[in-house]
Length: 200
Ligand code: FES
Ligand code: FES
Image (cartoon, rainbow, N blue to C red; front, top):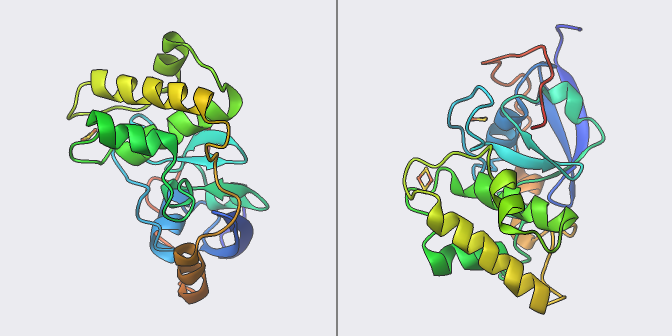
């Protein structure tokens, strides 16, 4: 593994982006610091809590475990890319309606986990919902409201076939972020992991 900074091209929330850093820079840090996409949270930093969940080529991954070098050519969706403009995803609406968030640290990861589930399984049962969220920990709400919110979102997406999936077109706000992002060079290199244990 070269020890020199690299530039990695990928698409983030429907926008072409170039991320810079050490090959083992955590994708979590590259997204938060270079692109200012701070909706992705850090909880444990060790792949245990799911707070840093993002969609990477349609797979739910813990971005604290993904080295920058593995993101080349990928399509990434963060919580900032889930809504379509002002139109929230059904999962986001249900979280609001059912009180599925308190402090909000786990919420972006929970929502990405639920949205990714609905992308591949449009009509999941309760057990599938629980299994899909099993890697996401919440310290605040208990899980009942969260499960209820996701199940309600499932019901809504069954009856509304035009419900948005993970967005592919950039929002105006996301365009601004990518247009103005600074070239930071080498990013933080905390918690470098060489096992590439990205997915769960
Ligand atoms: Fe906990 Fe990434 S911050 S899994
Ligand atoms: Fe606080 Fe889940 S809402 S950790």
